[in-house]
Amino acid sequence: MEQECEKIEEKLYRIGMFSKMNQVTIKTLRYYDEVGLLRPRFIDPDNGYRYYSSSQLEPLHRLLALRGIGYSIEEIKQVQDGVSEQRILQRKKQQLMKEISERMSMLSQIEGYLQQEEENYHMVVKKLPGAIVASMRKTVPNFDALFSTIPEMGALMERAGCVCAVPEYCFNIYHDNEYKEENIDIEVCEAVTELKENIGDLKFKHIAEVPEAVCTMHKGPYKGIPKAYAAAIRFVENNGYEIIDSARENYIDGIWNKEHQDDWLTEIQIPVKKI
Image (cartoon, rainbow, N blue to C red; front, side, top):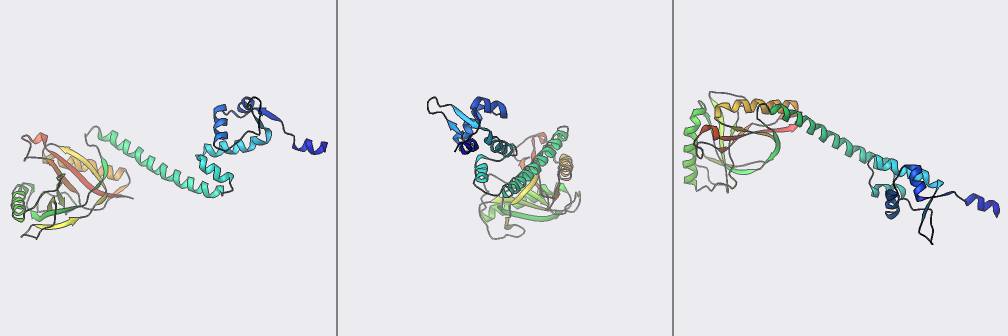
């Protein structure tokens, strides 16, 4: 009997000493007790003192190691209940790889943003909404010809009884996929509330949502827009994207509501995907 008592007897340490031995705060040890991860070996019924044993050193170190690599309390409980550590580790690894990829992308965008400060072109990657549009596609001799195309389109939209969507979304799509100053294949689009019957060159259709587009604002005359395109394309190249569709120009402010060209505001939108 005496030999059996010696086998089960353990050296006990008050919570303060156990805390010092393992460089873990008393508050943390109490928390692990509350959530059921590491309970004291003995609690004195007279004074409530918590005692831990030397055999609890290994479970505590394992617990601390798992917490150090990002395990949640629930995941550690799963391990203690017999769930495979490998399975949880693989899941954590995939999660971390995703987070690292997102952080690297964010870092790259920050570097690009710092470079853009000098040019005043700041890039945003965002979704472009799907829409019902009234559109007119033409090959125009030059950009100035747009000023006659847009009124023509407006007259046809009025005949069709179009109601513009709110918020307004008026944009041009350049189908040449390159910068041209002559014989430009352009489609003028205006978001509307419903499909109508086509009238001459005025067509109605659905424009699909674009999951990702690199966008930047250009303020001022349209002749300066090529600088905005150049900045956007550099951003695409430097941040691991590729262009997947024709660029758009979203006209927010222009000759119709601003007296001075310096106040015109145009958003460049380039559909992309991650390489």
